[in-house]
Image 1: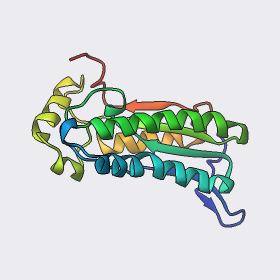
Image 2 (image 1 turned 90 degrees about the horizontal axis):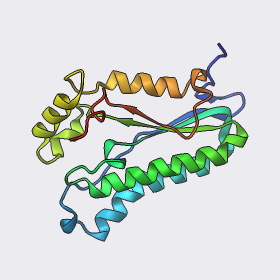
Image 3 (image 1 turned 180 degrees about the vertical axis):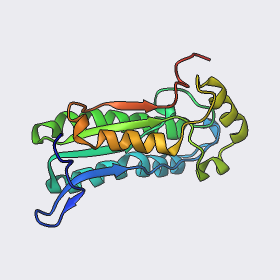
Image 4 (image 1 turned 30 degrees about the vertical axis):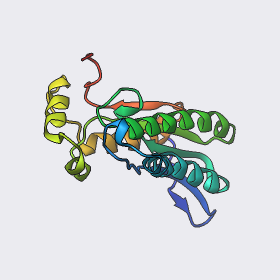
Length: 181
């Protein structure tokens, strides 16, 4: 197997890997959201990724990998998640468009859509205990997705083992999205 592209080469000044994992948003019913909430959510979840990638584009080495973190809300309706979900849907679309455009330079752009991972962000979510229990119950494994599982998937997508993967959103959720309901 080829050696994985270095993260940053001081010899060439080129980047090999970029991971954008930022996420923010207001968790309220849609009728309680404002344009300020909209602008703030899309600015960090979509615009920041776009600005980062386009400004750094000249620094990416051929074979570089760009990775964005999405969420279940990009493709599924989640209660009190309309702006975050919409922004993550836009992020996934942007990933596909950038993948098509950057591919000619040998740069891959992908996303990961993790399942419910127990992080500090769950402390601020409405009805978080119920949501976590529901996600674990829907999983064939009867548990939440782990940080290690998401990290391993990210490592794969950023490695040469994934050279044929471009413009894809990899769902890492332990199968919670397999069953409707």
